[in-house]
Length: 263
Image (tube, rainbow, N blue to C red; front, side, top):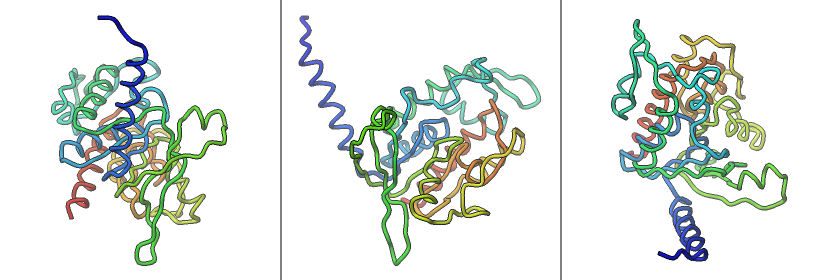
């Protein structure tokens, strides 16, 4: 077979063009491809909803790839091990309800399951703003404004594009970037104790894991937080290289949004 360079280029452009067009009006837009949002994408896809993930970096996976201090193993507590079983991620028991997983296998498996469930992942795309609409006099998040990450990194003056979503999930991790857009650009109050992004506390794995799941919730009309963005928005402790709470957070936000979309 003789390869033709133009045919290769046309194939890529046409495939990406079709994928992007198909995801400009969706049920759920997930910002950040960390483990919580990828789990949410998996469960939303399995439930039959149209979701897409927008990730500013080259590789999806967030901080899960690096394990703890670049030891590429992660810990997961017993509460979340059923999710690993469902996804087919191998793990080893360490006793007392603790398990470890190879972070590369765990991350790559979650990415694959998410995409195969029908949720597209757009890497190298940065969310720069939100769309908002008014309903009965109240503002709500109704979509995202997206641009290429290299364009934003270089500070080029290129206008972005908009896309619509019934709901948005801020899964940007420690920065909680989308929450900060709301308070900065809309002069609005979040559903937190200060009305702003409270900021995360020092590491306390036990409290942080519980806090992550408990505060996976709607932080502004149309906007939810999951994973470390939930900790940062509501002011909980970080938890280090244990990821059970992240997995549970992704599953929880998918269940909440599936219920709301069904209604």
